Length: 304
Image (cartoon, rainbow, N blue to C red; front, side, top):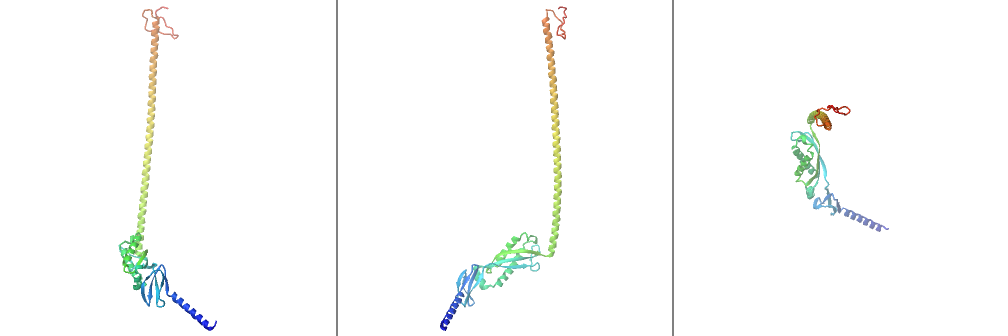
């Protein structure tokens, strides 16, 4: 290859590289979590650029991108002069974390009117005011139990205060409530008194339980005694009934014996009358006719 051809090849290569650089500098890709604007000679031109590939004149313009992914910032409230004052005049501190992002419908205002530092300062000031406003509605004793409710109210208050700014709060959390050492001592004393009261209540419940147990045992003993007495009474009644039945049976037996005796006596009388009838000769005979052991009749008339 001669010098002329080599020179032509180098020029062509340079031109290709130049075109490639110019072409690559003329396009920009806006990601799904981004929005962009075209800046030409220091001035924003056109509308907000949505995700995709966008062309812009090279060298004199560029595509500036803004993330719409929520960003977080922390704010610490100390117990001192910066702390919030509760309803019962106690100063408390806390740690608050806020996540925010650009409002897509007003992102052009965010780009043209506000810097990141201005927005962060606005969030901080509004957050301090919102926390102090909401905490002032609650006593220090109710902060923890109303944690979720307070968080919602602070978030709503913060959103209201930031309505004029092109941002939106996506999440807010409050943690690490803090208070003065004096109040810590007061809490410990209160907890000790509470523990003593609970112990006394437990002792009272134990005493009541023991008393109820003794009453139940006494009632059980009484019921057992009543059941035993009732059983003995039933037993005595059964014995008396048995005696009465036995006496009735004996009386019945005696009555039957007497009846049998009367029957036997009558039979003897009839037998005597029968014997007299057999021997009667028309003359009157004595009423008494002895009967021997052998069953013979003694003749009292002198006749054979």
